Image 1 (spheres, helix red, strand yellow):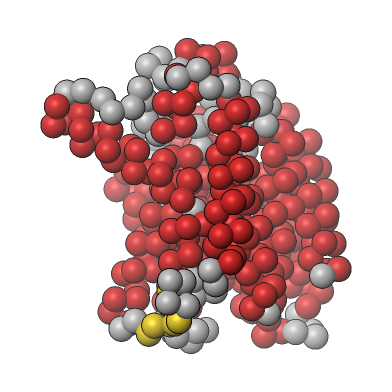
Image 2: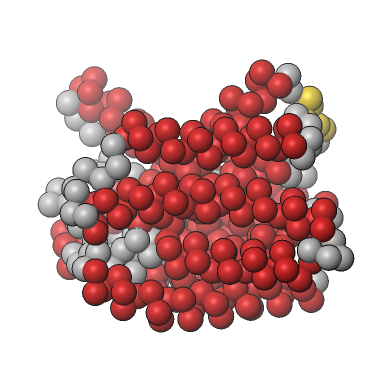
Length: 325
């Protein structure tokens, strides 16, 4: 347990130092948040707040991964080699988000990365990671089903598209959860902590280490992301965190646990789907605004209350998820 605590603290410190260095650069580049005119009016004052801050977490994860690789490469080489794909899927999705943010905010291309190119980039990372798990690490296609508390072996032709769906779906869900100061960071930190606890229970050291890195990086970033936020993560951060959650769940052979553990991001996604479908059919809206956190905001909830409630719900779901394993 000592090593996990040390990794969390080191990642936390590295993230804070990285924030102090990178934040002035983001301000100098004028990569400010662009708020929608039809969004909550309270968000208009956030216009210009530095975004693309997910690069801070990306740098932290990169530094800590290299440090862990160097420390353990001699004594536990096999473990360090298994650490790299977890870092790859996390940073890989983050890079796709970074390219999108860079085009929108630095190159001032309001459309950012074309949806087709963005999907191709995400697919490349998702397919590469999935094939690496099945063909290089040979972890098998067993998937844990919490309800019956047993593993089932999926045919490879089902497992691969299923894994890709989990990766893309989770990144999209976390991306939609990112809309209020500290919301996505808080919720995903709790989810990653729960997955790290599960990895400790199962004795999967590489996941425990990368999970500890992510926890420290998220907590460090959260200091600057809580309301009133001094920086937003942008697609760089939301895609990175979504990739990390899905990548770890697949590595642990427990993607189905995300149905419970990541229920808040799932509800955020479903609220958007419901809103769009209902509006197309009737011309009316179910919610005042989607994703659903904006509905609560327009209903009079303060941002801090929404973050607190969603985080508490995620924490309770984490206990439930750990309990049904």
